[in-house]
Image: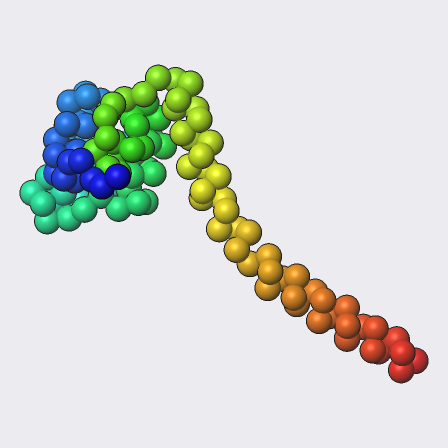
Length: 121
């Protein structure tokens, strides 16, 4: 499914739902200035994946699908928020496993080299 709302519309609907303004929202997300948020509301910037994840990390009641696609509801109940958090952390942690095939290949090469060294002695 494609995006239902623009990023500007998402921010414009999100802020009142979480009782924040652009300045307090940007500070809660760890930004020094609100320019990142204002640029989105003006249509000059987009909500990045990193920003979307940060939003639901800081505001766990916010629906990730709303932030990324504009799909309602804006806010979710606690049980869904817990599930959403687990899914997002799982997605973040899967990057750690991307190197496993290369690591296994390196280990097998090392074992092969050690076997060859043992045969020589």
